[in-house]
Amino acid sequence: MKKNKVALKSLFGMALLSLTLGLGSCKNEAKPEDTKEVAEEQNDEKFESNDAKEDDSEFLVAAAESDLMEIELGKLAQSKSTNADVKAFGKMMVDDHTKASNELKPFAERLQVSLPMGVTDKGKEQYNELNEKSGHDFDEKFAKMMVTNHEKAVKLMEEASTDAVDAEIRSWAAGKVPTLKGHLEHAKMLDEKIKNIKK
Image (cartoon, rainbow, N blue to C red):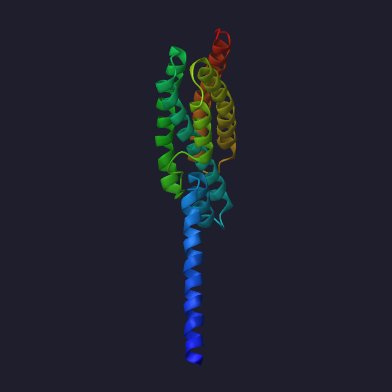
């Protein structure tokens, strides 16, 4: 009798364990993890006792997130807008941010920093917001996004150009500031131009 009780207890325990594991995996399948969070978690583990590397890794992850987002928004502008200026700005986003993204990867490899493997939740959110619009509303939303995003991007690069621990990253960030400031000015002009177009 005792043996049966022990066997039942262990069976019950195993059933409970498999149920718990099953529920856990269902939870994970429901919402894929944000690619930025995955990269940050990996970097936190790697650089737990190295604050300098951790700070530089945070910058590289943020810069990669920005590039991935601008590339996708740029592609959307090229395919969805009928405005020649918006299409041209979209192409510039794809070209310049693809270049920046490719330049970023060797730094990450050298410092063993994990980068987001795809568009992050923030990027998907902006993409979906923009994709809901059409016509003049789409162009207006795109131009506003480009102004806001590039104000943040300029700030990020300016900070890294003085605060990054790695000298090569500081130099690269400083070199990117003029390009991003150019994007910001261009975005502001585009925003003004679209505001003046009658719906």
